[in-house]
Image (cartoon, rainbow, N blue to C red; front, side, top):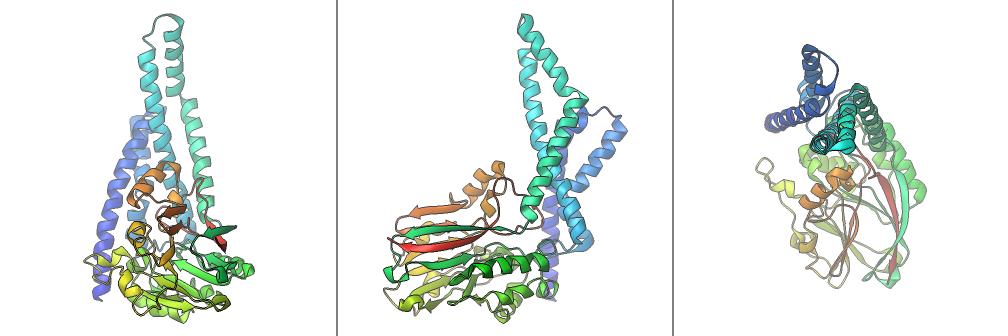
Length: 402
């Protein structure tokens, strides 16, 4: 009961934040798009209010349908409102570009002669209804495509990677990485089943899940996560927790994951023996654990490696990549696998995502002797399901020694 009350309190704050987001997004769409439409002011006001409901969809849907990790609305409602939210985001960006172009063309229209007249004509075209229609159509296409990219079953990306400190005896080990699945009402049982089937078709030696597997409580997701029980690999299906496991009730999820056959590395490790050579797989908790509402053990590499055999290389699962430089100070860790960033999701967000994640956003980084892989993820949080030029993937790696 206490957990439910606490979750309700923080959901209320979270929803309030998305009300502010809706106000800002609606204001931008109004200034860059709605104000130019050839309608009366009452119609523009109605359009603005409608846009606000779409822009604040997270707050609206959670108020109506609830949800502690994701939004618990019917899937068709999630798709429709996601398209509208994406449409508004692109309208905002194109509207800001329109305002910038209008400002420049206004200044250049004061130039003498034909040059100034050219920009006066151009300015009238940018303001006109045909320009608004073009912006609307372009926004709809981009929103639809980004929603498709977010919602589709991830393709498999196969690659070979050389890790300098990788033991020669383990050369050729195959690893499937399934990060950020965000199993929810959006990414439900049929989607999870296809992900599991594609993964098992690869026949990996080892399957690793670096967090954010679920959005929602155990009771809400029990059917959606059921296919995970069919994930099998000779050397295990190992996982760490991400921030969304905490939002969804990590204490309840830990035993539920174990029942599905996932070995959760919660500031702990296991030793595997592929080809007879030892390899340590360690996993850390997420920084979210340190928040006062959870007050749970934060990531501790010392605790995770307590009792581990010395002189054995370590592969580390930590959901966020932001602490990779700290982890690199331990010479035993040769490979860190993270997620959390979803590859940046949109080109315009990539630099911001990189900044808040320690300079890491997607793919491979070399930090001293540590090889960091930030997986782009399979799913997304259903409050903002957009991907543009940052596709989801099931990563299948063949690891080579130097």
